[in-house]
Image (spheres, one colour):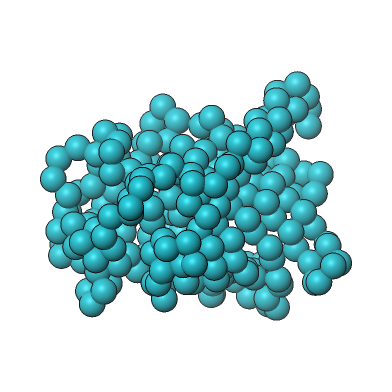
Length: 238
């Protein structure tokens, strides 16, 4: 992080306070649901999100009701490479890299320890409630805009131009944060994250965050991500 922070970012840090001990990993747990194309019935989703904050990210996905599982998936951004495996289908490519990097940062940015001591994360003021942030993405950069709640000072929205899939153009992707509170781990986070694509009639994903697990061991999850990448490299016809 270089230069002075914009006013709304400074106000957020003051409202949050500093963690007793900085940590570099976290595992987000909670309840989630989604619906295709922002319409139709909401389906239950279990999502466990493993972070080396601001560097690597692996997500375990399970769609099902109770003990019945319909679909399992593994998404992530590891070693500057994005991937999305749903059942036996694996998507990779430049669009997935960018999309996965933004997904990672939309969560990691909520932990100031992910970026406060880095010189490759740059904030720029827009006004008293909004700031742009430039984030590392492989050998390049991705940009996002963070809007802050005028009352609480906490982030209320993260938005960016994100690829929706391979061969598709970037669209505005919006993550709204609400119900900020201290988790059982003592970490201050939004209780609810709601995700919307600008070309859809309504939100397609909601997650109620219950735990942050700061400092958790994420080595196993990262190893699974790297194993998937090695498998893909060994079989280019996947």
